[in-house]
Image (cartoon, rainbow, N blue to C red; front, side, top):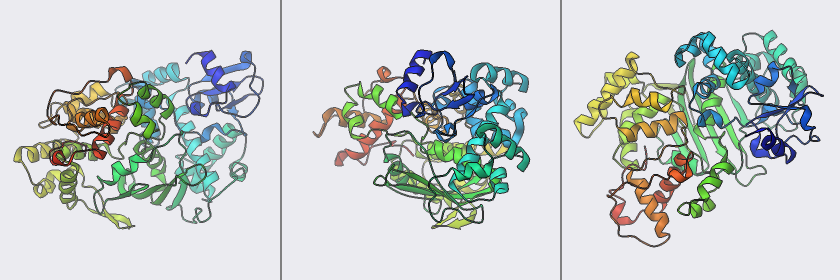
Length: 506
């Protein structure tokens, strides 16, 4: 967007741009979200910034009226596969808190000095400033949503000391932490525990939101590790400092249609990473209006977009786990994949934070390579391929994560036995949030295309056949086109074909 496009957005107070850029006003020294209800400033006094960190570094403080730190994140970090986008995904996952700038730079293949220069040029702020802005956002969320002790909020947000926490909050918000907490208008009863290991928070997102992502996760849930319904999802997972357990619930009938995250247990140091991964899992930083507008322009997808506005692309809370699930789920039905993964789950260790019927953790790569593969049934070639990949992950010879780009991910995965373009594309969609992947050879994609074309009518075209059209017309949102086609395939699979329908995805 150029200056005047952004200026028109703030003049219209368009909420869909909240979090995508920030408006700084020289005469007031304040920066705002685009939808701020304050009077539109004169264009001559306005500077737009890509990140709140850039506004901080330029000497501006956050608006007390619109609270620009309370918005969904920018979808650009998924759309952009350049160094800046990859860096932001890792910063949001807490890499700087754990490994420092040197660790972040090493993951991206640059020196700390090079990375600082790249991010300063691209985003207007260096990695430390970007990490500080992320901490400030987490701190604000905890201050206004919970009654956690201020010291607990400080360390849960990633600050190294209470003093650093106090100084940053005052600098960013022009309020003390206590005063910022007092600005909370509503607090849900019972969501403010004395212990910081159990929290309940509302997750901001851009409207519209289609809850089909819950059904997607529910039909693939592994008993003991995950549980899901059409409006809820819960699971256990490993984080850098310990086990965690969380649940997310959607209430489409309540005012504001809230998404509520309940964290049953987590090490405070892992809280920023958990929040980031849950947001990625439910694709909460997407711009659904822009996506739907592009998809609805294609006559093949228009009816589906109208029926399911705001469809989301499920992410992944653990990249290594997602690769294992993708490899097991190749060329078999969802039900068969779930059965195999349930067998494999027996190799995982018990969770240290059991609850809500969830008592296990997904097996680590080392556990799968050691003995977990013996629990699987099916072609020996597929089992050997999984064991080989798990061994490479366990030995550190294969490393994949949120900081990869699509070419790098392909270079890492394609040499593995049993991994092809479909697997790479699927992992890119769910781990990287890559928005422009289209799996043309996927059987469910072809079946979904036929279902949409036929409407309510049956079609006798075979499931096997030529690849589906590549939907270049809706680029860069072809991953979301894929989601619509999977949804169509799942809801309108002819009975005689349901047994041979492959890859509705693991």
